[in-house]
Length: 480
Image 1 (cartoon, rainbow, N blue to C red):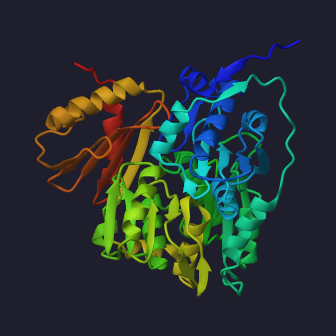
Image 2 (cartoon, rainbow, N blue to C red):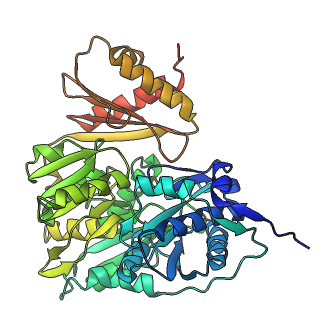
Image 3 (cartoon, rainbow, N blue to C red):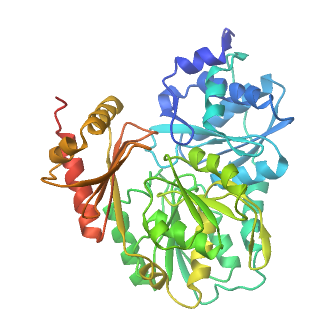
């Protein structure tokens, strides 16, 4: 016989080692016990009651082995607050965010996005969109009493979120304008793998299913593996594809290739998407490609810290001055900050990362032509990024701190001899622009114990070499 005890949410959260990163609360699966999931859920809902009236909460999951049990715990905890939940099963994060926005209710997405399957996370949505950094602090500090969970309920899946997400994009077009196009969908374990083919087929494309996996695949759209690069090249040639489309685990970050199988960098995809949508003002993280400004396609570009909450926070300021506002990240996630017209049809804002909109707009921009033509017409600046995994956050922070004091010394330790530093930006991590135009950017990950390196140069080989050499030296760097 189990003994029920009363817990306080803030105490459970503080003792869990689960922390908010750039997008949601993240931690090891072993740290997301039922009580920890319950604590986050009740604290989130209690904090939402300060500004919103609602009776229901939407919840969905990705395909991680641990996600369903975490959702069960959240649902059981909210029941204690007399809050009913609508469970939408496995759907992309933007699909959940969209249906919750339509219903004017909060939402919880159980996902670790791109991080390995031994980790997981929780993303939270207000009735009016993704939570802010101040909301995160409220969740951490709110004190809500709840009792330990004796049993977890079975959840019944509602299909509405999936159907409305499909309708959101297919309703914009009255013709099958992708007729004659062949789109490969790299399904792996993406939360949207049973949805994407329906969207592209309804728009007229012939769809080829690729790489479906019964095991969770942690695809990082900012650090695409050599294996996945080779796969896209092979598939494009083998099946005669016009593009290969994929996403990260929860379907909010896109990965799309040109007709030859070359994956587009997320910020280049975002640039082309925003241009096709006739966006006037952009908010983008500091790590994005400088071709955004040099293309001169936008009236205003604001650079932010890395993470969708920071991008979204700028939308309110931009909306006061500009008619159409959007943002995107180097990982490809596109955030629509205002209502726009597409093909003469209204498309409602969705201020959270989305993978489907940029894919559709890229194909629309290409028209009867090919994607590579669009990419080649842009200012030719090339970016590359990668990360050291299982790298202590404290060590990353020490490296960055020392680099801010003496960036020239850090660059020398990374193998850059006798270089002239043109500018240093400390918006997020340490971003150093050299006189020859090379950009080196170091930043601790906000989601996992990883140190990321971003580079930008006039050719891809130089950017890639910069990242590889820098990370190799950082691994052995003695902090003296």
